[in-house]
Structure formats: structure tokens, C-alpha cells
Length: 167
Image (cartoon, rainbow, N blue to C red; front, side, top):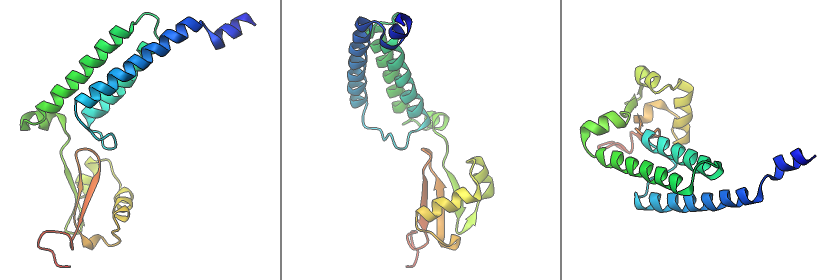
């Protein structure tokens, strides 16, 4: 019975240390993300996604590990976020942006589905139809452009909204 109680409750002092470490790391992450600039979490680039997952891993591991201090976790967190900031700034240079960001892909051009681009995005015709419906498009002929953006969203420009298009 003692082993079960110990497994469920554990050492209260260790739990308190974990709580203090997680709070300190949470505050460190919030401040560091705030200083690194606003980035939408809804549409993460691959670099942003890897950073977000890594932050979670560092915080989770450091908070519950008995062999990792809060300072070690904070140092890892700050280093990761600084590396992220460097990559985000380097993306301003076209050569680096080309390596880091996936290219945009035109899925529909003037009502014609670009099947090769659709395949490159790992999308089916049903996926595309679903996205078009979400944008209020019921007829493919009304689509001037449907573009798979580097962050994974799909932009749809209908003929009536296209530059020079007639209403």
C-alpha cells in the first residue's frame, strides 16, 4: 500500500520544486516569446512549429527532472528562442528564406486545378473542394487563383476579386 501511495503522491518537496521550476520556465518562455515578436500560433511556419514543440519539451523535461535545474532549463529555453530569432531574421534574405520556408504553390489557376501542385502539397481533390467551400466557392470556374501558402493556409481569389476582374 505504501508503494501505491508513494507512486500517486510521491515526495511533496519534489513536487513543490517542480511547480517552482515550471512557473519560472513559463515566465521565461512568455517573456522570451514576447521579446522575440508576435508570431501567429494559428499558422506556424516549420521553424515556428519546431520551436514551439522544443519549448514544450524543454519546459516539461526540466520541470519534472530531478537532474536538471531551473537555470539549466532557462538557459536551454533562452538559447532555443535566440536561435529561433536568428533564423526568423535571416529569413529576410531571399537565399535563406528559400531554404527555410516552403514555396507557395498555385493549386488553381483560372479555374483549372494544377494536379501536380496539388500532389506536391499532399492534397486530394476532395481536400481542395472542402477548402473552396470554406471560402464560399461553389463553382471552380469562379476561381482565379487558389494558392497554398508557405504557412499551410490556402488563399482563394475569385474572378470578381481578381485585379481587373469584372463583378
